[in-house]
Length: 132
Image (cartoon, rainbow, N blue to C red; front, side):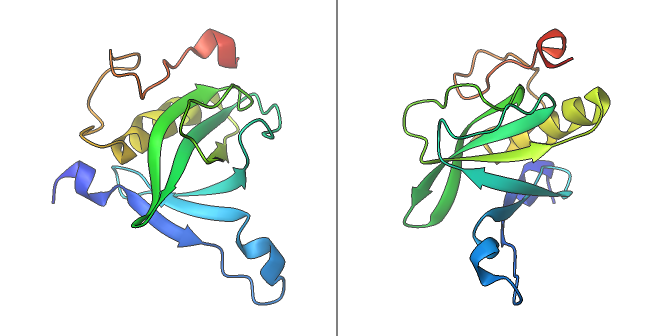
């Protein structure tokens, strides 16, 4: 199996005790197969987390689709076409760099091997100085 075939939407939280919370939390699998928990926000409603990977998501008939990704501050403006922002918060800059690289595989045609800041308009360049 190639790396990018693992990248996919992995569903929302199943919370039988608190069903109202279930839709707020989403799971995504990166190119490595690692599962990432995210919180779902409307564009413009994201808290100002310092170390976070933001997935800009469009809801489609086939399910949610990542249309862009960024790392660093979570409250950056969402690109046009994004219906939601799914935010994965990390504790260390090293984890931020890994998650950003791994979750880029969710973008169509990205195998996860492109360098940060590649000339693809869907990858908002990772800037560790801005995130630190």
